Amino acid sequence: MVSRFRAHWRRVIFQSSRWDEKAFDVCLIVAIALSVVVVMLESIPTLNPDLRRVLYFVEWGITILFTLEYILRLYVSLRPLRYARSFFGVVDLLAILPTYLDLLLPGAHYLALLRVLRVLRIFRVLKLVKYIGEANVLMHAMRSSARKIAVFIFGVVVLVLILGSLMYLIEGAEHGFTSIPKSVYWAIVTLTTVGYGDISPVTPLGQFFASIIMITGYGIIAVPTAIVTAEMTNLSRDPIAERESEDPVCPACGWQDHDHDAAYCKVCGGHLPAEFQPK
Image 1 (tube, rainbow, N blue to C red):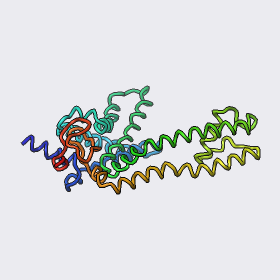
Image 2: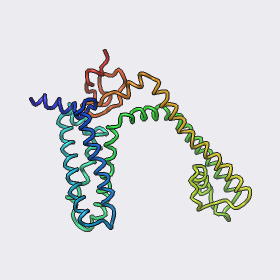
Image 3: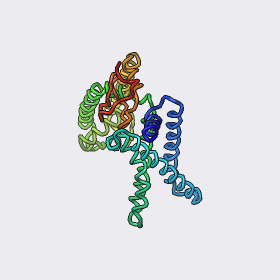
Image 4: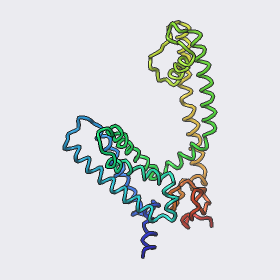
């Protein structure tokens, strides 16, 4: 009876194909979204005291719910300690810990720390990652394009160093470009089209040079987007990658990013569900 109970809830918690599994995920998503809204509303200083009291009880209700969920995940996991040390296990713990720490740190001199602890509850939004199947495809695309993006970023760093140095020579300290680092900062702000306006060129040559940088910035911004988009397109055409995006969550540690023909979890070594093991 106990083993059947654990197997049933292991399926409900760590899978998302049947109606009860999806219902469990939807309930948690709603609770996570509600908890984030509560944290944001609690930060409003002019909030009505009665409403703040209601939010306090709602927060504790959500915390108790997440606590029961965390305990249940540990109970049904094949390797509870491995799950507790996994990424999602740590996120689940951080989702409930700040509220309980509020009770352990009374006193006026701890108020600043308590505010920080309450803000930490916003990280419950990380729990949403495990319920978004498309996130796996995006992670594959980001990982596949990591080297290209790294080379691109290195090229941008070299470019802003050159542009900042040239602008330092063109404008000089009398126009606000007091050092090369500050000129490089201006080049970054201009190249990314942010344009704070705290430093701006005054000379005609400097303004012409800045105009070229601004136009160049529009093209540079599109590069990493194009790289990731191309990788996502390749993944969508790859049947193996498509199968990878459907791989299950490991029932032992919660890890989802497995190879398409994997029989064991790459993180904890636990068995994957039989329907995903190689034939």
